[in-house]
Image (cartoon, rainbow, N blue to C red; front, side, top):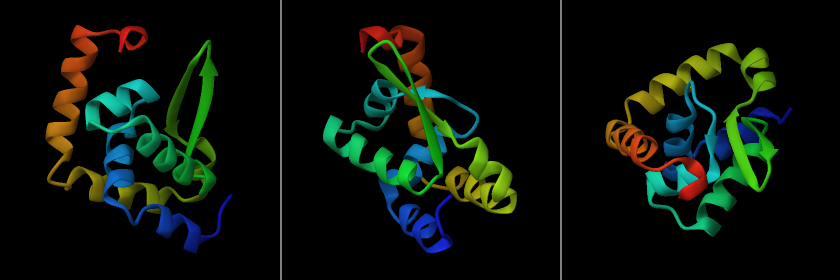
Length: 114
């Protein structure tokens, strides 16, 4: 698990906070994150790598797809911080729009076809 300085640095970016907002209670394929936030593949990968290296998120591979979620270890070690991040992410001006976009994408295009 990362030290607090690394964790806070990882959370100090609007794109990474938007990703965390989408991951609240969800496991998402990288293609869903890219599409919902209109991110390029390199930008999404860079942001996800920073969050993963900080221990905030975890990933798993299934076939050629990578799925991300909030790390179980992070949640267990920092429950109060997870609660605070959840509140911060919920209050972002982009969160509702991002979640609505994700919902529409999931209804119209399965992950494998994005």
